[in-house]
Structure formats: C-alpha cells, structure tokens
Amino acid sequence: MNALYKYSIFLLLTAITCIFSNTSVKAQHYAFDFYEGTFNFSADQNLNIDFSTELSQSSVKSFYNKIDQSSYKDVINTLLAYKEKHKLNDWLYYQLIRKTAQQISPKAENYNRYTLYKWFLMTKSGYDAKVAIGNNQIIFYVRNNEDISDIPFFMIDDKKYMCLNYHDYGKLFKREEIYIPVKIKIPEATQSFSYKVTRMPDFKPEDYTEKQISFNYKHKPYHFKIKINNEVENIFANYPVVDFETYFNIPLSRETYESLIPILKENIKKMPTQKGVDYLMRFTRYAFLYEDDEEYIGKEKRFSPEQTLLSGQSDCDDRAALFFYLVKEIYNLPMIAMLYPTHITMAVQFDKPIGEAIIYNGKSYSVCEPTPQKQDLKIGQVASNLKGQVYQIVYAYNPSK
Image: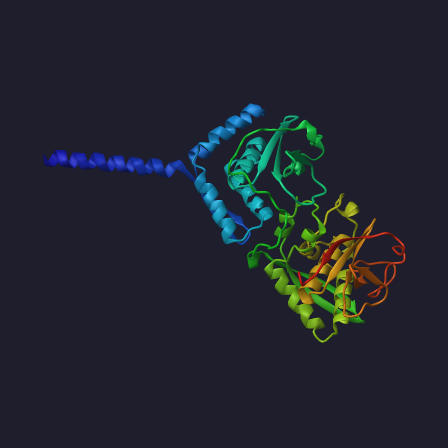
C-alpha cells in the first residue's frame, strides 16, 4: 500500500508539472520601451494566426474569424489599461498599437499580417476601423470626423474613414476606388478616431539632449539651453495635416517645457505685456533658420511647437504655431490666425490695438509677424507684399472659452 501510495503521488505530481509546463509555453511574453516606460503584455499561442495565403476578401475574413476565436482579450485589456493610466490620446494609442503588432507580427516579415493585427487590435479596442483590398495591397482606415487635408479617405454610409497606412505605399497607392472594403461586422468597433494631441508623453529624462539657441532683442543677446527629444519626430513622422485648432494646441513635453517656458517668463517678467509679446514674436522670428517645407521636406508638413524647437529649419506655419503656444502659455491673450494664399501670420488682442488694427467679430487685433520678412516688422505692421491681399481667419482663440 505504501509503495502504491508513493507511486500515486508521483503520478499526480508529474501531471501537475505537465499542466504547468504546458501553461508556461502557452503564452508568449513581450516587452518594449514606450516613451516614459516599458509596455509588457502576454499573448496566447492561439493569437498567432498564420497569413501566408494570397491577399483577398475571403482570406482576410478567414483571418478575422480565427483570431476572433482566440484568447485576445487579455492583450486588449492590457492595452486599454495602459492607455487609461497614461492618458494617451488616440494618435499616441495608435503608436502603442503599432508597436504591439510589430512584436506579434514584424512588419518586415509579413506586411499584410502586420496590418491585419493593427486593424484587429484597433477594432477590439473599440475603434471603427476597416481594411480594404485592391491592387494586391491592404489599406487600413479608421473613422474620423475631423478636417484632415492630405491623406486619402473612404466614404461609407456617409461616414468618413481616413487612411492610416497610406505612407507605407507612397506612389504605389492607387485611386481610392481601386480598394474594396472588406465587409465584416465587429460589434465593439463603434468609436471614431481623433488626431487631437492634447498631452505629450512623459519621456524619460535621460532620453533628452540639450540644444543651444539664441537671438538678440534690443541689442542684447539671449541664450537658451533647451531640452529636446528626437522621439518627438517619430511620434509625428506620419501625422497628417490637421486643422489649425488641433495643430496649434499640441503642447510641449514636460522636460522641454521646463527648459524653456520658465526662462522666457523670467526674461519678460518686468516688461509690459506689449513688449513681452514683442519679445516672444522676435524670439520665434529670429531664433530659428527659415526653410520652406517644399524645399526642406518635399511636401507641406506642419511642425508642432516642439518639432520647431527640435528642427534646424521651419517655415511660417511652424512659427505661427510656436508663437501661439508661447503667447497662450505666458499671457493667455485672445489671438487669431490669418491665412493668406502663400503665408500665415498671427494677430493678438491687447487692451488697445497697435498699428493697423484687424477687426474680427467686433474685436480689434494687432498683427504679430513671427516669420522673418524683408522688413523688420513691428507689432501692428503687415508685410508690404501682403497688404491688400485677401486672407481668412482659420483659427480664433478666446481664453474665456
């Protein structure tokens, strides 16, 4: 009996060991750096779905049916918990989705499979996203209600879907009508996607480097050592041309903010408001080299304020956004953005208008030109080549709202 008992215990322990052994290999653990920290997640082996077949409507549907039956919910819950904890806007959450899909199915190994994982993770996170097939390409779209001007979109049932992977194809991208959406009903996928970035990540302090910038004001030199992080360029590498309100209100990251804004405030604290705004205008105008986007990048590209600080060159769009951010952050004055056919400039509302007043909705604004011109323009002066040209107010900022 004793020997039988010991043998029974041995079989039981062996069975338990096998169970735990099988469990341990069932889930694959992943970890990667994501801005301020490390993102960790585990994926069951049944989430590893093959997609080596020809790209077609039926093969995409088959992939979805298989992965929808997998143990994917832990991955989604981990993603959404991270999003909530770090207050990620949709654009930054999409960057997290991209890196997660890259871990499960590397882009370079199988682009179609990588794109399907991105799409699946987005839909199961609640976003109304779709894929379309055509020209042996897979196109990835998400519903968006904002004014985006430089990327392709679909209209389905009067809803607009913006393309998230257009940049991967470049000139190989065909006309939108070439691509046929794959019709799959996903109950969870109901949310629209927003390109608004109202909070930058808290990057690791050690990932910043120092950049020296300087300019002269009233014959006095001012020098700054600002902290910059190249990861900002990666965040906005494929960011589209958004509306001016969205664009102007992209903030600085914490370390960059703390290296610049307190020093600017210190430099102008004894100046009257008008002179302080003049200081910020000339800082934005002369502390950075000018270069047109078409010549520098090859296309229209609007830099966020932090990208302008990071970049070696910038144009009028970029300086208008940086000037707006500085004035808003330090003085919080009403402002308007004036868009000419080939230029954009800013105007600020003071207690009393300066120079040639710009009247908008019954209020007087004074032009503050943040981009270098042939003349050394003062507040209230408009460049001679712009006088008489038609402009439109593309953004009006009112602090009381």
